[in-house]
Length: 434
Image (cartoon, rainbow, N blue to C red; front, side):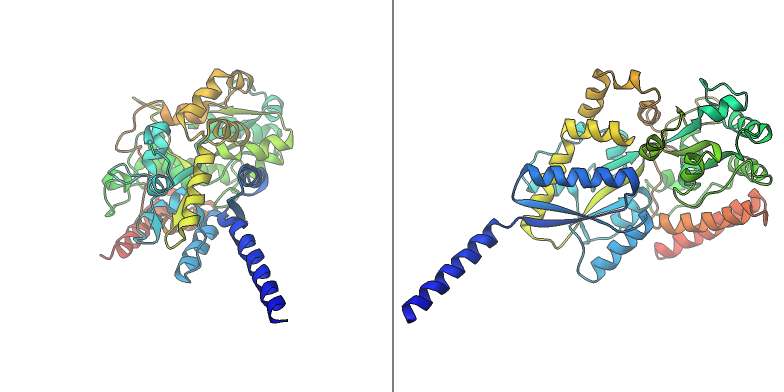
């Protein structure tokens, strides 16, 4: 009896060990993608998981960009972080300042046995997610550039030229007024992300300073400068249009996209990554470059938005190896080219961009190359390398509070921007311990 039991126990143990050895290492990927972009995330994970048997990527939706970042911070403090977390551009400074919390993606790739060559990636994107010495800290999964979308049917009803979208902000404001007064749509113009598009990219695209120290890329001690006359004039124009509903505010992040997809507003400034949801509506839409103000050397270049993938510290060697395999999978030319063409996000690698250019995709899809051309058209200046604050999400919240008060008619643009700069500067000083 003893021999039988011993043999049975040994057999069971062997089966358990064999099963354990065969089990794929699970790698959690926390993200903030919704709608069409969530479908892309699920598809990429499925394809990677089916491409090999050693690792399994588990996508987990954690809410909006700010909510996902907060969830990641809380999980790290609780010593239960995921292996991979998607963090929006505004959270880059937060992650860079979290010493010991993350492992640079360049190190993850190298340790995983892959040769890391930053020249393979679009320079404007990789520079934003790298340290001053060039070490890439995170993987730029879904980088985007803000562009202008417009409803061609509404343009035609309003007597506007549907083949030529407005190029400057004064032209946008005039077109919005015509859409409203003609009755072509209840609202002329709306915008997602007033902080990223109407402030940070407004500054870069027009080569105007957002803040000192190269907008934070040159040092953490930043004095904000977006209350100059240039910004006051722009935001007062928006505030004036809001009085009769010509401009309609949708929300702090991407909520205003719904005002456009429902045909309530005829013009939308939004991330290139919002394209998937617009295509799904079947609307007759057009794409134009981000508007600018006329002036010498303008427009300059836009700065990346979207998000990148960060790797938390404290994970197992197997998880890091699997993460490296996954990032290598995402870097494949065919994957990047498809991701760009399906989602509207920028291709991360030069090879994917070249592959798309060699095809007939851009001629068949007018405007789809616009976000890349905006970012890569000119070498960046001190004003247009990007914005990186140690607490940019907090500063954006402060700005949004003042913008919302302005749009509600409680204060003018000058007051709103002065208060946002004063409060923002105080928050920065507190964050850096001064």
